[in-house]
Image (cartoon, rainbow, N blue to C red; front, side, top):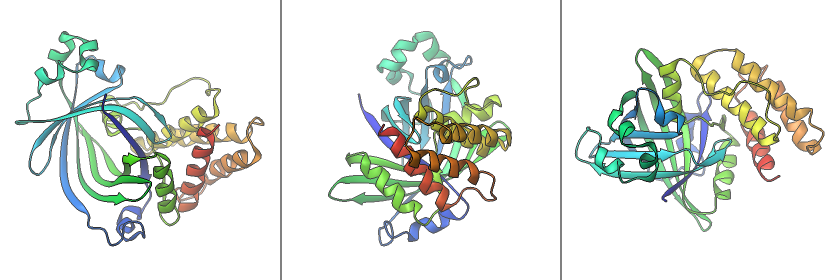
Length: 290
């Protein structure tokens, strides 16, 4: 199965404008393109429940159709199945979908019921980084998600591993966070569009998970929901999840201190600063090494 390994980062004020001058990118020739995407699902939301995303994309010179599965990952880092192929125009290639295992599992009735649900429209500026340990595509996306009359801005950075070890993604993110405000982001453009369409955000209710990494993911997903909804209650959800890590005596003291600093930082204006990004990336990496 084809796989995509990437680290998704949400950007703070001014970070997108400053990114091209960062030492890791300065001097590299960027590629710029406009990407217009339409996402599909059945009326009952069968693809969303199965954690499958289906889109058609218009690039400057062709049409593409892409199917992605949720796969595994957290804290912005994901490994997922991805199938992409060229199509002759904007119409959905239903026959091509029928050959893919995730759609076969959903069945013919759902495949025939697929319809447009929401769109994303953004400018992508990308750089190709090649080094001895990894080859990474750095993609800066700026635009918006649209679902009916609802809108949410897209201002994010995706670091996609093309070859090498995933640890190289972390190191690059940490280098960028030295000077620019960013944070890990969990919620895909597809999930953001579905949330706007439905007026609800993908945040599980109920008690906090027991696993420390899952509690940190709860905090990150809450910050994603805050960004798109503007609902301040999500700031409280993130703070509660981080404070639970600060109070968890099973964690090393350094991790508890980092969680406490992040929880406290959420009371500041602005809270998304380079320091917040560095701490969140370091804590995320530490929790996933446990």
